[in-house]
Amino acid sequence: MSTGLLRDCPHIVDPWPETPPPSALVIKISNFLRPRTDEVEALDLISRNPKPHRAEQILVHEGSHPDHVNLIVEGFACRYKLLPGGRRQILGYLIPGDLCNLEFALFNKPDHSVALLCDSRVVRIPTHRLVELLDRHPRIHRALSLAALIDNAILREWLLNIGQRDALQKLSHFFCEMEVRLGAIGRVDGNGSFELPVNQSALADTTGLSSVHVNRTLQRLRSHELIDLSHRRLTILDRDRLRAVAGFDETYLTVQPRRD
Amino acid sequence: MSTGLLRDCPHIVDPWPETPPPSALVIKISNFLRPRTDEVEALDLISRNPKPHRAEQILVHEGSHPDHVNLIVEGFACRYKLLPGGRRQILGYLIPGDLCNLEFALFNKPDHSVALLCDSRVVRIPTHRLVELLDRHPRIHRALSLAALIDNAILREWLLNIGQRDALQKLSHFFCEMEVRLGAIGRVDGNGSFELPVNQSALADTTGLSSVHVNRTLQRLRSHELIDLSHRRLTILDRDRLRAVAGFDETYLTVQPRRD
DNA sequence: CGGAAGATTGATAACTCTCAAAAATAGTGG
DNA sequence: CCACTATTTTTGAGAGTTATCAATCTTCCG
Image (cartoon, rainbow over all chains, first blue to last red; front, side, top):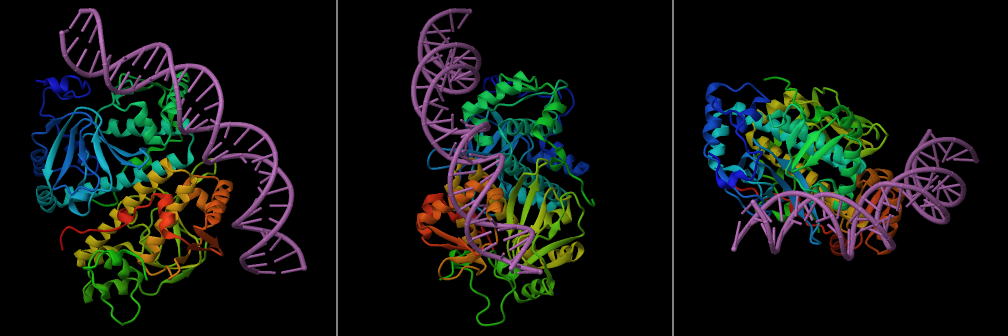
């Protein structure tokens, strides 16, 4: 069952105790197209046997030259860049089903690092195997391209968030985004509550605020009864109101394919 | 001495020893691979007959459903998002050779708008023609994918810039980036001077600062004799020092293809 | 020449930061 | 299971960068 390693990471729970669990990657692809049986098989095959990794582990080092991509099967990771002075900007979060460094394994060296935020299960896929998969299954290739576009849209929205919104909006917006993303892979329960293994220092580096200010802004959100954040778990108490505060519009996270 | 991506890729030989001036798109593609004659022809064909457009014109409306992509042949444009309160975040700049909305023409609706910053020459390419081109010339397709990765890297660097650097660094960094990008397409003269049709209000929306603060920060940069900005033209007086101030490292703008 | 847009300046307010330390929580070993 | 340590959260105070408002000056352009 659960190993000692995973015991301390309560969000790693098999949500499909009975049936064969659809892999995170299949769920993700399904957002873009209805996968055929052979495609499901290929995706399942490639994400088989995830290895447990410890929190804090660095999956990708800026400037390295990886020969594989990382698929997050269970857990959380973040992309980030460091500045000489020690400041850090978090560039995005990786959740189950996300491919870590597709682009850089194929083309360029990573311009940023990726680290795990909690104990996670990760598949290392050799670059050549991924390329084979994409060659053999063009629809999967297309779906992953769509996923990359969404990543892009997320980056642009973050730019807007960090550049133009105030602290309260920044944090609210981030929470709204994570709720949608995690909801799409079944990680949000009926109460609007989900695992979010992100401490206040990381929230600060996500939003470009100081951790002290994050702390005080969180208190404000709590006192307005918009959220509850404790034990690495976020509960959205009033989603509509939180979205109103954030100015959140989820369309940038959604897909409207033109043709199949 | 021209700065730019070509200089940093010594294996890429200048394919036009003496002949007619290469189109902006050909120059751009050449940063990623050495185009064959037929590819140059195809690129030239598709970027033929650019139409003049007035400054301020909006090329792409957020939420619209364009049936074409815009190729900037000459001029400047910017991507941006607006917030209900009237605030604006500029998300990136398009310079000659840049394709405006490749992604959204193919897949999704634009999540942002694009507007011209000065009188420009633009080619409207019907989506289907672009798709044909990409199908017929897979190497061009691949090169454009690489270009998209660079765009991505730029977005991440902007996130770092806006999130973590102070006003002086933000502006310096932006100037350094534009110098490299414009240098790569031959738009920077020997004195480190180039056209930059971006007013202080746009600089503010680029960096997430107020225009008043931009003004005062520019004065500081000028008094340090790092730049000169007037008549919509920026001159970098001391590139090394400006880069040091900005903490600028151009590798995120460059390409190191793995194969081919 | 005159209006409009952009740049500059001054003054004040405010949001956010930094420093520092205490309180609370989580993790670890006996 | 408890004690102990490290990490994280919280709090206080003061400083500072940056924003806002409003007016003036300058430049651009018809």
